Amino acid sequence: MKKDLMNILCCPKCKGKLGLDVTKEENDEVIEGALTCNACDITYPIQDSIPNLLPQTK
Ligand SMILES: [Zn+2]
Image (cartoon, rainbow, N blue to C red; front, side, top):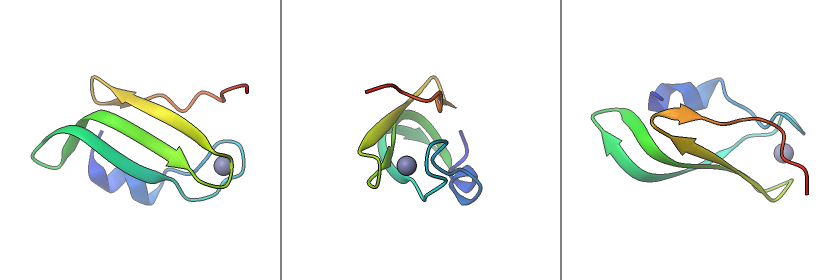
């Protein structure tokens, strides 16, 4: 996913802002990493450049 996408992405649960942890990146693209919502204490993985924002059940 493009890093710019962070501007429009929000937590699907609380609609809050997500934090970005980059494990692997190319140019402005995040290949692997994680999106974290501090409010919900949930981490959404980014794999093969695709963020998985499916609601996670705890
Ligand atoms: Zn949240």
